Image 1 (tube, rainbow, N blue to C red):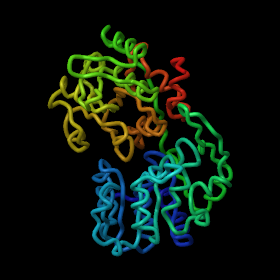
Image 2 (cartoon, helix red, strand yellow):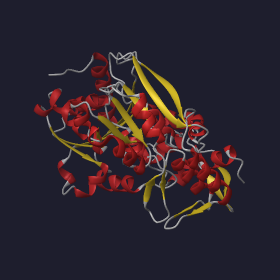
Image 3 (cartoon, one colour):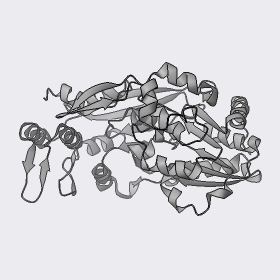
Image 4 (cartoon, helix red, strand yellow):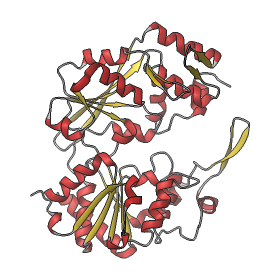
Length: 412
């Protein structure tokens, strides 16, 4: 049976004290720092008998494995589901503690997301443990709705984000097309975190005994001449008409999205149909990493199809199958960036890059485990494409917005 490391046991005691005092605790733990098992131990110290653990779908199996491996199955009952399955819960009264993984997903503002509202309706008065490696990946303004889901929030007197923002955000105005809107992204981090300090426990990889580092390498692929021709045409005309389908980029946001697809060899037409235009990236990956066990992240659905077209049954999207065979795995970056352990891979290979800074920082750490000193991540960029510009933004913890895109490509 597995046992907690000393630092995990220490953090568990700290978190239990906070949970007992305030009815919720926020465990902010870096990737692979052991926050999942720590939260289970907190549940044991708290005396919980029936615990509900909400996470991402792909992380469910590893959480259940930890539950059994650490022996908590002899202490209390655990139900593990994903956020999208909350509506299926028949009776939430049975749960005496809620653990919510990747809690930063509730950070949308100025209005809460669908699942944030559903979660609040179900568990507002329940004791809760929040888990995240990146509580506020882009701005501390993301913290309001993460605390809005508990009746013990230090900000419960501010009944809406807008009222809270009057005191905690340096509000600006910005132009989106012909409209002027309020920009709430400049949260007062020092003031916000001062309010939250008493509720938070931090866990780092260094504290947990990790000495690994992530080494990134950028590989550039010459795409087919037709790919560059189509991208240039779309930049110029904002539309490409074919015999049966057409590509429309009548706004900067749509142009940004279409170029992002096309420079990596795929497209989603206005009809909703998808097509692989260029297999250059896939062929490059097959040649460069032949004989190695790799984990791939892709951005667009058609990119998985391109990989599948070339790899066939040698490619899987199932973690257990990847761990038990010599197959490669390909995961969509948003669904695979959190709660998934890809340590069996020799390398992490990024077919494309997401516009989100959160995706960048979480996905690149998926191979990190104790005892592994180096993690090699390869980024596959199209030569003279859009990916370099995206990386420049997200590596500085800024999402690649339409405003940055327009500046990069000298668009009005």
